[in-house]
Structure formats: structure tokens, C-alpha cells
Image (cartoon, rainbow, N blue to C red; front, side, top):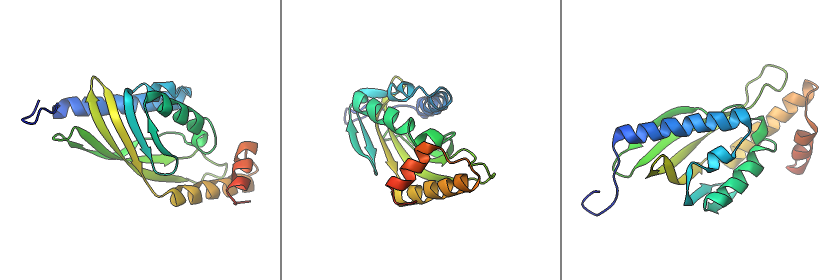
Length: 170
């Protein structure tokens, strides 16, 4: 505890927790089991998502992440690696840039966008808050471009075609 009674963590613990976060995201992406992601949060955690809104509690986070990552465009994102990260030991935060590349649309082109993520550590490998900061229009433009590339290559999935029509890209 610091002088104000707040819990503090060492840099090593924060680094280890972030490594665990990254491994869990890799496993959730590989297996499609996004429960793994939700289980990294405290029961009373907050998730601040600039396009979808705020989610309060692990179970709201779970419902949102499963819905989002099992439908287009989330289910066509192949990985979520951190391009870089920094540790704020005083606050117990990890701040990073997360890449969001999509699978090859069939023509070999790369389509991705990134976001800044701010994680608040709660101890015991759990997070009390995540905020994803990004420009939703940039993600929308990237996903529409992916759809056009997939369509040109003859491989646009029906789910993506429906999504594209709904967002005004068809």
C-alpha cells in the first residue's frame, strides 16, 4: 500500500500480468472461447468501448465480447498483438497499442487498424478496467475496404455481405 492506502504493484508484477493478458487473448482468438477474455476481469470491472458503450461487471463484458468477437468483423480478425506497451507503476496501469489485422481477403492484401488500450490492474492477474481508445470510423473504413477486396477476390462471406449492406457499404 502507498501512503494514501492504495494498493501498489511492482513493475515485474505488472509486466507479468500483461504477458498473461496477451497469452489469454491469443488463446481466446485461437480457440474462439472468449469466456477466457472475460474471466481476466474482476466481477465489478468496467469496460469502456468507444463504439459499443460501457460495460459494467464481468458478465456484461462477457456478453459483449462473445457477441462482438463471434460475428463480423471481429471473427475475421486474426490476432491482437501489442505493438508496444508502457507501465505506469504509480497507477497500476498498462497502456498499449493493439493491432487488429484481418485475415487475408483472398488477394494477399493486409487490412488492419489499431487502438490504444488502457488496463487498470486489480491484482491476482485480474483487471478492474479496460478502455479501448480509437476512431470507430477508421475501423469502419478498414472493414469496408476488406469487404470490397474479399468481394473482388470472390470470397466475401454472406455474414460480411450482410454487415456491409447494413453499414451502407454495398
